Image 1 (tube, rainbow, N blue to C red):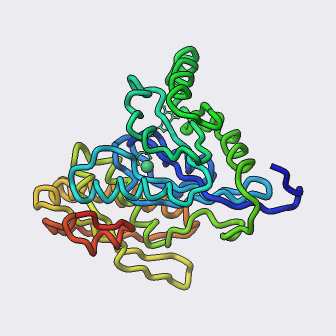
Image 2 (tube, rainbow, N blue to C red):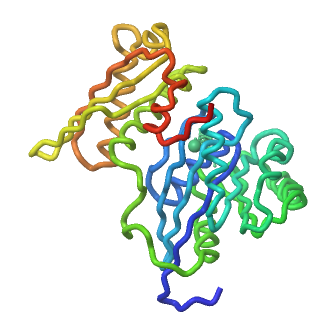
Image 3 (cartoon, helix red, strand yellow):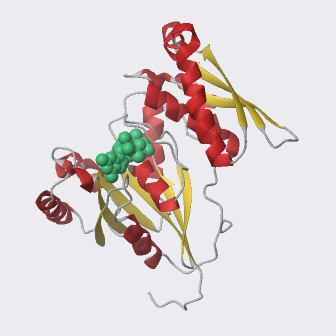
Length: 302
Ligand SMILES: Nc1nc2c(ncn2[C@@H]2O[C@H](COP(=O)(O)OP(=O)(O)OP(=O)(O)O)[C@@H](O)[C@H]2O)c(=O)[nH]1
Ligand SMILES: [Mg+2]
């Protein structure tokens, strides 16, 4: 690409991959700050999340998406649609593959089928800290035989190795254009939604099995005080009384730990003292109601 040295570049990158591939971890690494929540469980990211990274004169907008899988419930259908919708209008598609699982190429066959043939698609093999070098090379050859990737990178998003090269590679291939965001902006997510996402991350990290999938978190109150501190009130909605008991824990011990962990993160992200008040309510069918989807940034897919 022949650009003037001082010419600005701007464009968007859709990050696509299976659940748990490390998409959100990679986006956070490229942005250099936490904008998207991460957990060891699948289906952590529910909606499209924007991360904004600067590389020289290029502003790179990273679109983190929910993982692509075979959806069964309405919430899952909306999540997978949000992931594929991100392909529309993206300047670059970054296909992220967890190289540490068994048969990664086979597992990604369905995604590969849906990759746009005429787009600039980049392959990034992740979790290389868990894989032998020979296996990575074999996997790279296998995947490149299945799709005409324009470039291949190998990274550990968790440890940050190789991620600087990915950012450079992205920036090099974006068109010239005016930046759409401030130079120091990291995401387009409103603070109230970001605060709810952080609490949801702690629920994903601290609670087991299927329960996190049944949870919705919303910021309901937000008060800023003269001393700069913020008082945030959030509702955690679950689908059954039994789930409420689990979120609360014995004598309220679990929700206390969730609240503490979330508060520490929020104080770091916002750089302010935070008071966080959480309460739990039961709404059996929250995941069947269209208006709840809009509130968490999704389209209802009945
Ligand atoms: N060992 C290792 N673990 C990683 C790496 N990158 C991500 N992980 C871990 O993989 C798990 C999933 O990471 P996420 O970033 O939440 O994955 P995701 O693709 O966004 O997952 P969904 O949002 O559920 O689709 C977390 O436990 C991460 O810490 C890596 O490079 N190496
Ligand atoms: Mg994610």
